[in-house]
Image (tube, rainbow, N blue to C red; front, side, top):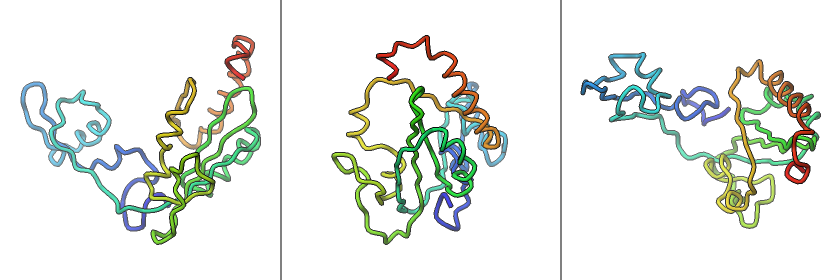
Length: 188
């Protein structure tokens, strides 16, 4: 599961799903509370201030928990062939790939008992995987890894999970169709 038991958050959703109430002051100075306006909560979670000034936000917090982070490389075609398996087996399955390499980096995060000893997922130099740490250290990269990144373009796509594999395959096909437009020194 994505969060510790007994919590009612949507499975592995964005932080906006943790917003349970908010108050907005609109352009006319009216104070609008989501308790009296359910649509405000639905739209206000992702409004980025478009509905007015958000004056209060209530979010669901969870107790600190630990996760095991496994990071490994696999051929991209193998990851895509097993995509449905990974999605059904792991609540937190993520992968990235560099076009034209057929190499994917797979990241799997799994809940472990809170008394599991930590093995420092923010170790410097980079940790040995799998590692176990408090949740926020397994969900983001370390500062050193962030500082040592080279220039690259990253894209995240949000599509219904049932369409994910088709969207990824379409993207890979598109990338392959424009390969000759790239400077080999930059792409490889």
